[in-house]
Length: 378
Ligand SMILES: Cc1cc2nc3c(=O)[nH]c(=O)nc-3n(C[C@H](O)[C@H](O)[C@H](O)COP(=O)(O)O)c2cc1C
Image (cartoon, rainbow, N blue to C red; front, side, top):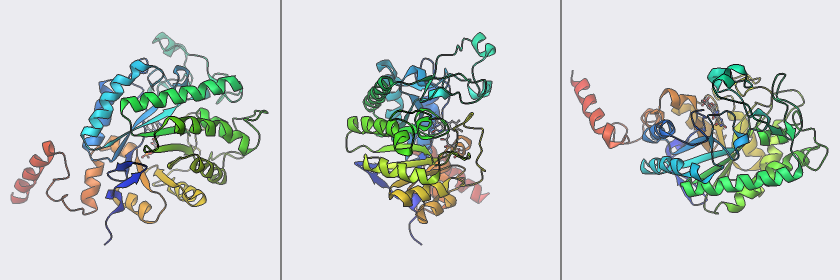
């Protein structure tokens, strides 16, 4: 039997990821003024304790107006660095690589936390103190009826946004993150530029795919230029809009080739989100439903990809790697359900050391091994 790829380290630039399991960025909507707190530390820390090789901090806004909700994390100011550094340090202490996703929500900013409705802020939210703010987008078209009308970004605004992305990257580096991901998926700002369903510009930033890719690629260049060569850059895309006339898998191949040329190391292949909240899926979902997108982009652009979406067990993850559909496996809700998913997948794939619990943190493994011995005897 070949050694499971899922637990084979992968070196990207100068960073060795200890295994191929990546905790997907997952907004907690639990920050105040963009600042991380103990919730984020415990939430992310337990995935490192559970053996994930790389742990992503959720979509972190590069500017205050780029938050999806009032509870989003941010890196638009220096004071936001310190609590994130505490998290990055903890992840490193557990043997994981600290990673962070940087984003701007565009016209999908200024919305309710999911559990309050996942739509535009209304009177009940405002009574709670969650007032809405003005949103921006490539074109003055709202996400859906009843959503905020965005202001069209000027070319000067775009330069300012590139600077915001750069500054946020520098702050992320100061906090100790070793992997940066640019969020260009799920109907947020960069995806809004890419998709013909949300970009109606007639200047150099709209029109054919080259024009629509221009601003996202400028952001990539801005980030890559301040990111040391030995640190990897990921970009998350929505590989397809899943809506007639929208962004297609072929478009993703074209975009991924352009990303690779600009020094992007991994294309993280998600999908959907261009209209309405990201949870309002228009793409049929089932186990591993986005893995074929990662496979297609990998082939079209000869670039490393990360697969995500209902990857539920170690064997399923291993199969996607062995069949060369993806190079990394991102896990989202499954680690919310079971933060020890990685160490358990290790045992399920029969990796040496799993049988005597030495792959677990010593604080747990020592006890679990004895517990198992007792159970076996009884
Ligand atoms: C609570 C929650 C928050 C999420 N926040 C983000 C986010 O910040 N950025 C992002 O790109 N995707 C986000 N997603 C999508 C996940 O990263 C992942 O792509 C999706 O959940 C599918 O993977 P899964 O089936 O393993 O959960 C979020 C998903 C969940 C469940």
